[in-house]
Length: 166
Image: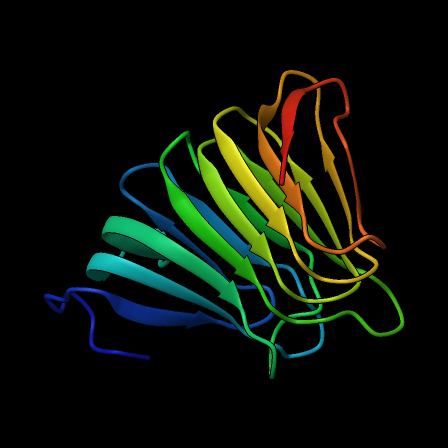
């Protein structure tokens, strides 16, 4: 674990299985995987510990990455609080799809891994699914732009207002 309360610009914190991290702008990330895989969280600010012993960022979580090698098998949960954030899902599923849930809107989601299952809520999202055999879905009231880079992947609006782009 890095030294706490260090002054940083664009540092990375690694979340192991079952670990969470939040920031002072209302973003929250949880690695719900059980395979000992990691999720990397890039942030700008200071890493601190709150009164309950939980790590948090006094600043902004900017990028959440599930890496190709050593990544989590999900569920990866990201709450944006309608703050901008980049979520990169690079790991591919093998026996089961890797599940991720992004809530709160204003997220840029890039799915490069195969066999991912992504649910996105909130508005102002930009979702690009490049992996094979991925399924994406919105929720009621959700919206944004969606791009599908592979013919075997799908996205269902779920009652949201999504614009399909090329």
